[in-house]
Length: 350
Image 1: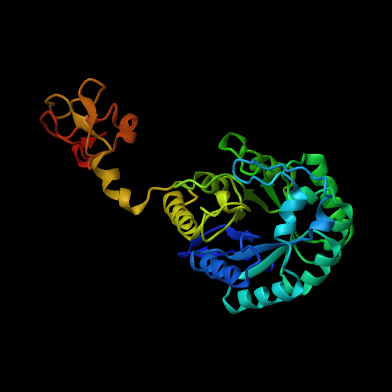
Image 2: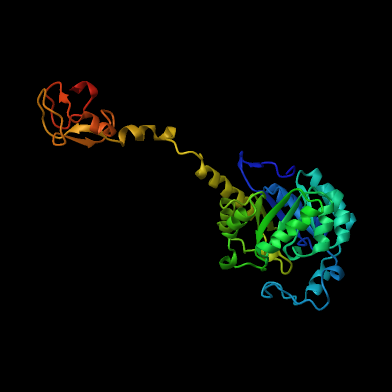
């Protein structure tokens, strides 16, 4: 993908990281810009917002599906109505702000109008898990001919295949598939990162990634493990302050968390190292001193036959190395030698 060229962090391989601000800006333009700069400063490759109108995304009778311990709003319409104030004007400003500051801009559309006005502002479209069966939206996104990132929370393989079929039939050429669990928050027990492997198996021609809704931990274990399992794109909610009530602040990363994650990736790359098994330069001295040579275990006489009884193997490997054991058996000693002598090729004859 044009926007998904191999990115490097500290000169090492890294996932393409999307910091999803969503509506954590609370409809404040200044706060949205602050969050963009914070994401950029701490290594994100893209920021993503959400564009919806309460009237077009949910009925007034739509019950919540999130944990009300973290977000007490019990009706989807009521929640969306609080944060549906940004329109084309605001996203146009934010898109230009991202361009100016060297970070990709993205915004998930939740209706057809949003698809149309977002098209000139973005390098790619993101489709939310809940819309994987929303045929009109899939078709409209596909018609833009832009790359698509498809989240797969609460779906099965056949539903993913059907969404891909619709997208491709209507013009999509490049589609990234994200493993996702549609729980807010997602418990570690429900993260099911092994599903990344299943997506890689079932959709070999597609880049696979991960959209995470777990509560962030200091070790960044879920995100780091998803990267090790092959996630090339990682999306995670982002905020300037995780203590703020409501929205997605409670399961978001902040700047410190994001920086911590990229430091983990740096360490993972250092530890992972070479992809071919070889003896590396730092092991040179170990190959010599920790390996074994053929060594005499008794005093021997000139012309005595070399047998299993008069030789053994000991460190260091500076003499005839132990892998030549069968080659020396049956040969003879050139001279008298003392026990514990490290045998050299010059010490033996046919």
